[in-house]
Image 1 (spheres, helix red, strand yellow):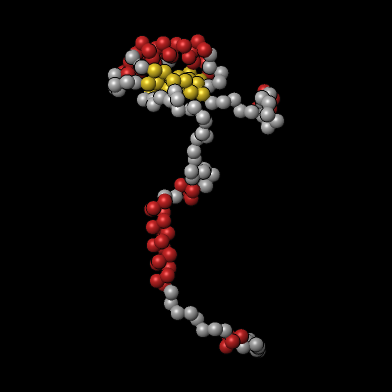
Image 2: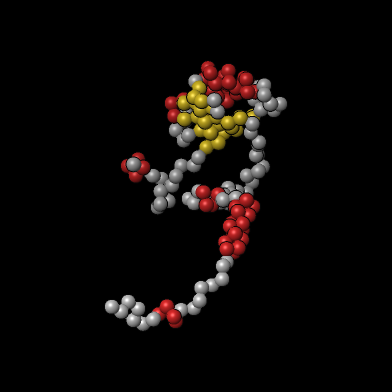
Length: 156
């Protein structure tokens, strides 16, 4: 039987020289770039590497650096760094935290369905505990693609 009818092996170029050092240079450059620029875009490809908040004119006029943060959700659910708190527990927590810094400022992240009464109670408790200022932060209501508000049946 004829196993090599066209004798293609004799028409090929010779094998290249050994380039193992280029493999090591490539590996070194990869390690160098990962250490210089870190790899947030590689480890979490769905997240942008350079996230910036939008620029709003006049946003820094009343900007305040906060020292403590709590979240307030529907039904009076209060989330502090230590866990879930009720209002009496929050009063104790606020008093303890107000003593840790010279000019304590509280940031309250409130949901869109939180009542004004709950916000007033927390603001009063923070001021009684010794907080200099209470800043309210919230998330905007998402807009529908047509530019109007979402209907309840569209949210599901």
